[in-house]
Image 1: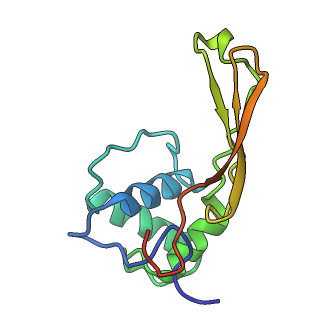
Image 2: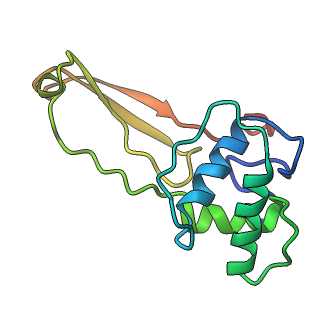
Length: 143
């Protein structure tokens, strides 16, 4: 297969900024060896010294050369170990949470897989189904 796994398409290192940095940071923080995996991620996401340190820690834990660069090997490893965040729908209705509607989409590890989403009313009754594709990479390589 080779190459970067979705949602990654490039090396991440200092001076790089973007949504992929946010995703990498969240996954690296989820990595079991890290002390605080639930630290919130800010929205701007420039690749900073903290990220370089997280990558080095991941590389060290996986017997990779410690470069601090989020390269293909790190991306493959991070997606394999840390893409699943463990979220489970509680089954609570939208009404019990103070809302009129609830959207339910089961997310696969490969976010490029098309899913069937469900729109539920305040009592969890099905209103409609729809096709959904979560974040992934298009066939032309763009996000």
